[in-house]
Amino acid sequence: MPEEAQPADPSPNPPPAPAPAVSPVTGSFEFNRPTIIGLLYVSSFVLGVTVIIGVVLAYVWRGEPHEGWEDTHYQYLIRTFWIGLIGSGICMILMLALIGFVLLPALAVLVIVRCVLSLVNAQKRQPMPNPETWLA
Image (cartoon, rainbow, N blue to C red; front, side):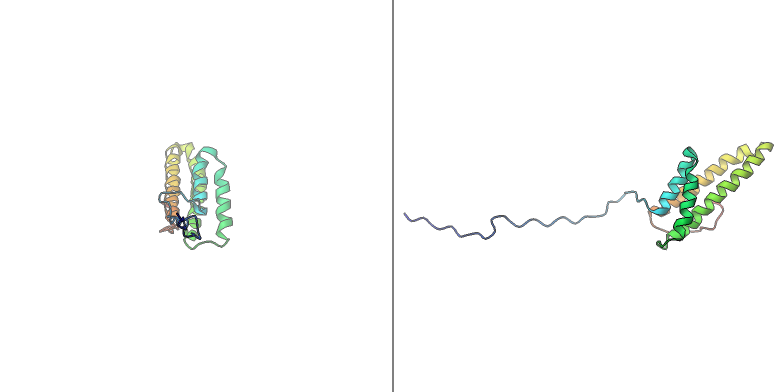
């Protein structure tokens, strides 16, 4: 009996399947420059010195090329630093009249709220709505 010839298959392996499209992960945390500064400010409540690193970075990064939405964050975060520093000095003086003991925690809350607002908007890559405000 003659054997039937098998047709020669030029590609013995099937072609590879196309790679699935990579979709961006929702809910991820992006470490952009304003976020780093905001996290340094918040960590200063525990570590102390990180606020100095944060404000130096804010001044340096403000002068470098960056995306447009970051301008308002740098202005807002630099102003947050000065609010905290000047406010702390005033509170220390007012501690002699015992009023500073009430104002210092209120100032801490204000600084934390400003940092959180900046962090939220930085994660959305949106500019700060009113960067020149002295309140939240």
